[in-house]
Structure formats: structure tokens, C-alpha cells
Image 1 (cartoon, rainbow, N blue to C red):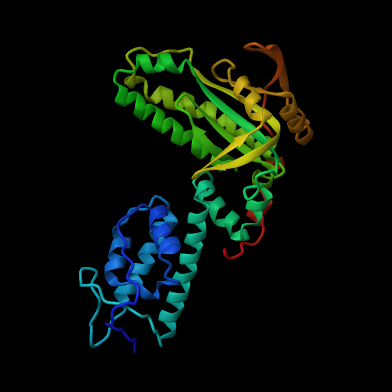
Image 2: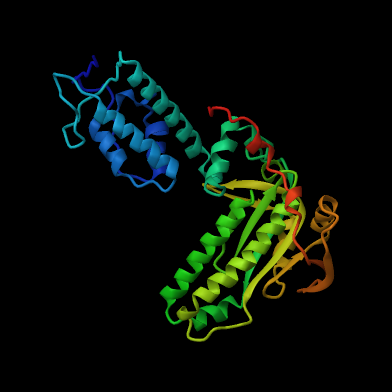
Length: 354
């Protein structure tokens, strides 16, 4: 028998259909409830009505709603999500319900952890956020995200849409160009995340991403080359598919990609995340390469060659404004797939988040 108490709670929690991050902030930080046992059916309805972007969030809410619907008694009957708020204490004598409650409470804590580190989880793949944050934040500390002074080694990938202004002027309508950029941004973001990179930002005429060794693994140098190759291919396919959005189809456009490697600092800025350091500067400058071209700076070239001695590069020059011509390395072939290793955090057993 499940005891449903109609006595009102000592502390009311007023939830509104907010974004996932705002909702968790209100329920966890401002008005902590400890666990899910004191949520009312009306509050569950609000949770159910919220639209969460992360698939894990939606799955969590759905499981909680299903549990709430499964709880009933002769006195109250089966609760309806449209009924008046009644305080529900899940005092389950039934082992199955106890197990469900335990699972949901664990999910709740995991989602709280994801919300706390949303500045990072929004910039990495779903699988990465689940497994990496399952390390109880150890990897976050290793990346220096809890420190204002720690630096680490990382590869930087800078993308520039060459002739982006002309592309905008050639668009039939501004809405068509906005749709073109939106789909381009999403595609580039997915490519970077799939190669264990961290997507920093889309700037409107390009993008910035970084591959820190603690996160991207020991073969980050090869992952970033694969990401660059896939990015070029995606732009071409996407641009070809969107020819109807332009009044005139510019042929001399594409992505210029610059890659560098060295010591950087990852910073949390408000709710966001960014990376700073000399390698960021030179990756952005090398992205001024011609359309469809990837240029690698000296430090990144040395790291790539050390991992795969069959990689071939052409030595070219790039003229950097106010600095003159610099030596750059243009990849001629792709890394050997068999050399690429998954990051350690992905292959190690996942631990529960705190």
C-alpha cells in the first residue's frame, strides 16, 4: 500500500515552464527539495510541459511522469496530471516502486551535475558529457576549469568562411542566408564533437574549436586533421545543396582552416567557455588560407608527424598582415585510422556523478 498524504508541504516550490538550466537552478540552488518525493502532481505537469533540448533531460522527465501516474490508492485513486496539487510522499512498500524511485533520484542528481557544468556539456557530444562527467569532475579539474591559473596543451582549430560577405550579398533573401549559416554551424559543430573536440563558438563567418589532450586523448593531433577534412567536405556538400538560395553562385568560396598547438588557458566566462593563448592567435591567422585549404603551424606539424610518420605535407607560405610571410604545412593525405585511439575517459568504467 502506498501512503498518499494530502497535508500541504511546509515549503511550497513554485515551478514554471522554464528552460532546463533555469528550472534546475530554481529547484536545486534557490529552493532545494533534497529529492523528488515532495513534488506535487501539478509540479510534475509543469516539468512535463517543459521542452528540454538535451535528450537525457526529456527521458528523465518522462520516466518521472510515468512513475507518478502509476501511483494510486483507494482514497485518492490514480493521480491525474490535470488534478489539483496534492503533496505526494512516495512511501513505497513495493520493491518495484522503491527501485523506480531510487533510479529517478539518481537521475535527478546526475542532471543536477550536468546543469552545473552546462558551460561544458553544451559544447561536447552527448556521449562525452555522460561519460566524462561520470568521473566526479576529475577531468574537469585536469582541464583547469576549476583554476584561474592552470594551463594545458591543446590543438586549436580555426575555421573561416572565405568570401562570406559576398555570399551574404549574393543570397536571394536574408532569411535564406540565415538558414544556410544555421545549418552550416550545426554541421561543423557535430563534426568537431564527433572527433572529441570542444566547440567554442560559431562567429557568423567562421568557428573556433579546441582539442585539449586530457579530453581529446593522446591522438588529438590526428582527430583534428580528420575534423578539418570532414569540415571541408561538409561545406562543399551543403553549399551545393543550397545553390537555390543564392541569386549568383560564387565559386571562389569555401573554408579556410588553420591549426596550431601549444599551451592555452581554458576560461569560464559567465555561462560560457572559451580558450585563450598564442596558438589561438596563429590558428586564426592561418585560417586566412585559400578556400578549401587547411594550413598547419609549426608546433602542430611536429606533433602530427610524431604520431603518424606516413603523413605528408606540402611546405607553403602564408602572408600574415603586419608580420610578413610565414611557413605553413598543408596536409596532403589523411591520418591512418588504425592509429587513432579513443580518449581514456571513454574507455574507462563510468562512475556515478556527485
